[in-house]
Length: 180
View 1: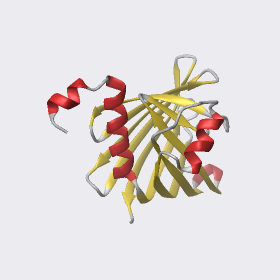
View 2 (view 1 turned 90 degrees about the vertical axis):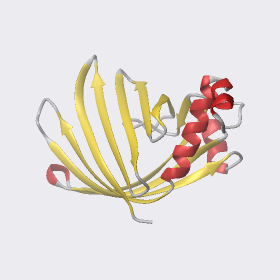
View 3 (view 1 turned 45 degrees about the vertical axis):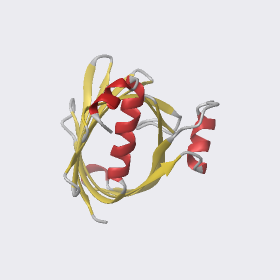
View 4 (view 1 turned 30 degrees about the vertical axis):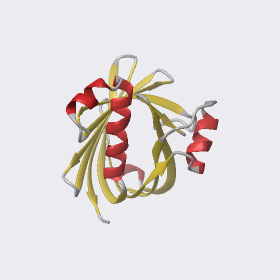
């Protein structure tokens, strides 16, 4: 798309176009190595996960269910389905498997569940550049600020800062390597 046409699109449509491309570029199998730092206690939790990210197009059954969960009467044009298998090390050794669905329309990201809730939630997102998606999610008195950055075709970094009542509680830092 040439620059003139891109500038003439509404801001929400530009964000949606960038997110669509970002989701397509994130599709695949990833190994995620991350650490969660609990700031008050100093507790550090290490986690290794296998992630499978699938691009979803309008009309996909998972996006239709997501739309229903949010009580929307609109079509969600695209999204991603993510499944994971995680091994927690350190103080809370456990294995966790799960899945989630993200869908977007305009500058709103719809999720079937939040980081700390099984309820459907929404986030605002922006793109400071085409390879970096920034999310801001608020619910139950907490704020989740996340940056996901594609580093070439092979790597992604993520950082999540979780705050409550204006005070940072936890930081999650991730390095993800594409396996396939």
